[in-house]
Image 1 (spheres, helix red, strand yellow):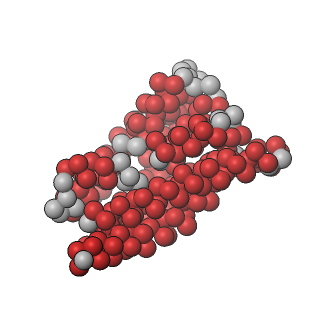
Image 2: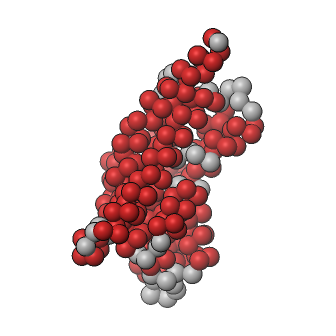
Length: 237
């Protein structure tokens, strides 16, 4: 009886920790549902993408590439490179999940996003990093994302076309909202972003937009360790 109550408490703490994530996810997921429907994706396809990809920025990018007629392989590779950071996040978080089976760790790794990683790794309460705690955190966040997509796709069916087309600005707002806070914390990464933009702009004149985006992501990321090494060298001097 005591063990059951403890499990329930841990699960409720996970749900409570997810509340800020849910509040942030729903409006973005609604925007994704509207935009994906505007880009001629069916409601089922939009919801399936949210349930399987479960990565906001990548989904916005994939929908935009689909609308532009980008080949499927290029979309998959671009999404893969964009989400490689999740591997690093999981490698950082998994050692903190003490006493958890490998199966549970593997399952929870599928629900790690930027936001759930931040909460799970930074919050001081160890109850969050238990099986019930992580279940509450990830399940509530995931359901909010999928439910928001369903709601947005449903709303798009009734919105006038001119208004739903205007929602496409949410795509740019989404990337700006992700980018600006990171650049404010570390301004030297403006060079990384600028390099990726320039590479993509130049390559689009010679190859497809999908491959130019993939190459820009890869080459742009090479600037990051270069800047880190240059910064350490400057500090040593």
